[in-house]
Length: 152
Image (tube, helix red, strand yellow):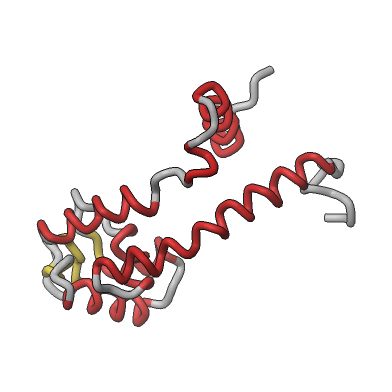
């Protein structure tokens, strides 16, 4: 990538750069919600991250959690320990290999996940106060960018 490019083969675009900077500021402003929600649930921010990575419908091996969160398996062990202490998750023997430990949410963990989704994954006030047509446009544009759907 050369200086002034926004990506391979893409020319620099000052408006796009500005939009990206503002979007990053908005996201970074939300980082203060993490410690608040973690404290409310009585877990660490790392435990909060693990809680979000666990599929409530399908327990998954700890090594899969480590891969999904792009972290060392020993770190996932500490995260799951945190969730177990709080009563949000439990280790279970794998269905086909008892040596493989899967992680499943407890009923209390499902409730905690709902709290996290409501408090961390809800839109920030800066976006929520936009008029509905603008919120819809923003959602459509982000979906297109992330899915690669570009109208002709």
